[in-house]
Image 1: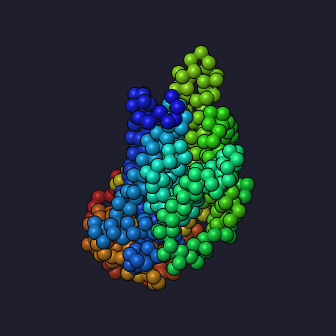
Image 2: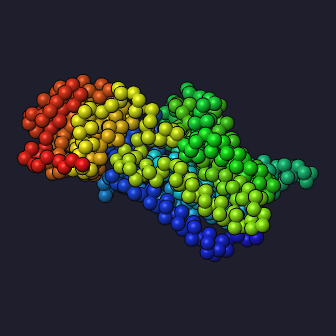
Image 3: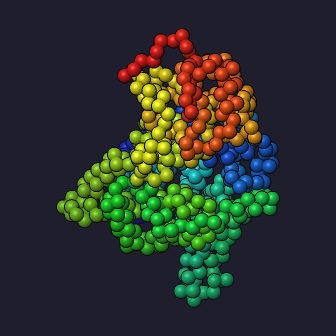
Length: 554
């Protein structure tokens, strides 16, 4: 059965459908479990800061140095003005796109190869990829642009053989939306259109026909113009009004050899180095297999993988020396490598067990799916990290997925009270912690949470005792913002109604940001909640239920 006849889900067969459905259910679980209890952190604040003080028009016409993603911020502002923003709502679109990528990717993989075991394996790898799970649970545009970019390049490839207006429209819409959500994602639509155009030009030369007179060249040129015009329609206003913000993001840092090794380790979920090397060889073999089966498709995918990487390596960008940043700016590269690995795995399985090649391919697909999920941290992180799932420490490098590098350095140790919290029964002593630092590199509470298993809320201090602009805090009593993990500490009734046992004010947090208002905040909290039950040079502990029995120990 060739790719053009593989057009119906039923053609894939019941086993394939069942496995892809299971992978999709896994994706739903990993992308939604505990999502509403995940604290708003780091770059998720870019859009919130923008929409809190800007009109719809101002959002539409600006990129922002702290790029807020124009359509995402417009969507959030409309949500805030109607039903209000909350932790789950903030990430709903990303979760939906991350889930949709699993069946969509499996379907496209099967359409491209006709290999049911490989496409089923691919579904499980995408569903359980820790980096893809992360961006499906984070209020940034990357999970959205991956799906849009995949759909766009698939539409262009389909247009290559069926040159209808429907496929051209699909490519233009998905490509323009991808570029609007994150400008650099427009590369994928551009590369796809240029590839088909170049292919048509070369074909016309082989036929002895000038490119200017070739109907196919003219058609592919028109396709590229329409895709570019669709992007320009959405990006013209910010390009005119705020191009300098976009320009500031370019240049600066450069990728190096460590960047590439780091990126590859993230692609494979931080498994041991020998396993990473073997997986890369299998993926390389998958490319060879694809090259033998369908040389144009292999060349197309190679261009989509190599050109963005080369572009980013040459132009550079802020913080791009980090493998994490280098990969997220070209996130479609990750499912591309997983796809090639899937194709290589099943082909090698068939070659090794020639007597029963299909059984061997299915066995390899199922076995590797289970091994991948067990060896990579996605399931464990979603199950255990709670509000701190998306903290950068846990996704910076999956080879050090549990902050192993901090344990030997005792300057990172939490105050002694946190160890006592750890001896209390899980959930017996809920805490409110302040100050909350929205920038993950300075937020040490995520690390402290590894020493206890108590429910955490986070105290907002700006209106009580802090100076300067409001950053990393929603405005108090503003119904646009309904984040349930944030508590305004000047609201005594609101604090006591949370049911928290302790209010913890960090006076001095090593490796955190300076807190010059610590003394003032301590004084004002003391006026509201009484003297601290205990205090040292790092932490003041306020007992919010002084008459309650002591928390249970375990």
